[in-house]
Image 1: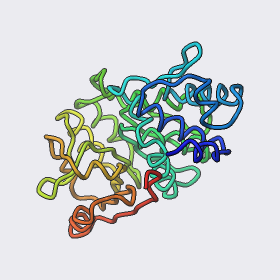
Image 2: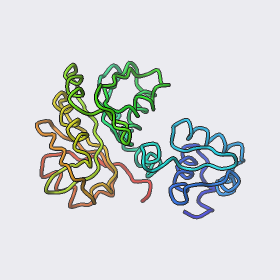
Image 3: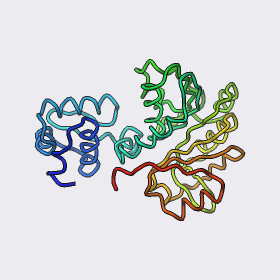
Length: 264
């Protein structure tokens, strides 16, 4: 994106996406640099950075901003942020005021939880993600049920048999799930055996599983097949999904919904 294109970005959401796009390329940027590139005042840039910091996506340091570590969900939220947000907003169309849903870990799932908490009334979110519980704690629109279990610091998830015991108390229409990859042979995958098992356990108490993921995940596969079988499945991704992957999903009677990729 050229400087002239950046200066045309007037809306706050557009500016935030541009800031995150720049930070994913160079990790940090000075306020003066962002002000010049966006064509807005430094005061406006600082307000945008404050907003992004409140969402736990970036870290403010005197005079500049930088990404959180890409090793945790905070940092990964910045990567393809606009596409992830569109995926989350599309998924939110399935959920209505007063609903109870299950949401597993992942950056798209975290953005879905935040959107529901901000735009739906009397929502109950059942999750095994300590990150999501913390991420939306300041929003009054959602009641959060955090399932118990063994805490994994890296994923900020709870796993183990207690997850299944807690999920057994619910019967929901939708279970929203993230994924680390996909292959024609194994389907959706995860990099961690315990997390994959938590998804299997939680999926037993949902009528439909909805996978939320960016299209690039269809170019790689994790080591552990999720194998959450028996429920209707939907995938919400961006429109850069490879045609072979889309055909492979549809051949398994998996519904594919795509949103416009902001990177296109």
